[in-house]
Length: 260
Image 1 (tube, rainbow, N blue to C red):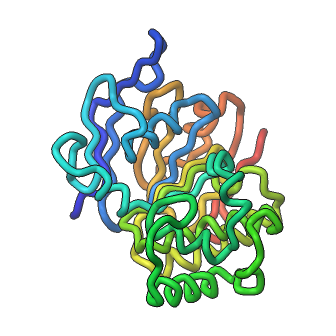
Image 2 (tube, rainbow, N blue to C red; image 1 turned 30 degrees about the horizontal axis):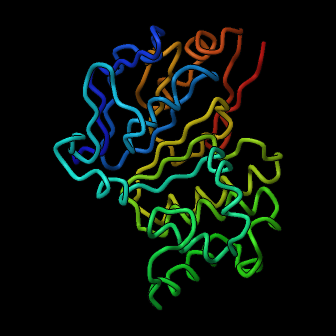
């Protein structure tokens, strides 16, 4: 099967502190992964190696079979859609943009539009906006949208460049239950109609939708378990991951965590 992402014996050390240690992780086409770990476990550092924001101290990372330094990395980044609450750091620019322009900017992997937009681009954006059920606010400024609408806008933006990999970095952070479930229902709908592998990063197992096929557990910078979600999301492994006694209940192919 086609290789999407590959970490081989990856370690990362910052100012003498070990952030990642001997990480081995392999994602192939047709797999959708959830990466679970507590805050500070190294999830963001791992993700930062995909667009080459950070580099391994040791080991190798390949994206779509390419290794940084042997390929033009801007071409790799164009193939990745990214949704994260960390995009809030660009709010000063986002807030001045209308929703439809935020979505269009996804084609260029930019915040703001600095290149020529074709009529075809506008038509594609309109279709995506309709798919994500936000047409009713397409002419509104980003700053006037609810938090849930903003998150769906960023998800729509991630689909604009027809990505070969979608990275969702704690996309439901800060959302209430209703907004979270609406966001997840939109994601699940797109996952069933689009053949785009994704990585969903969180510390909440309730956000693992049915289309997720595999799970990796990251603890203290090490992958403690990985594999098919049914084999990984067990009472024993999640008790070890979270450090408290828990059990997992399944309903409609979604896991729910209960503290014993």
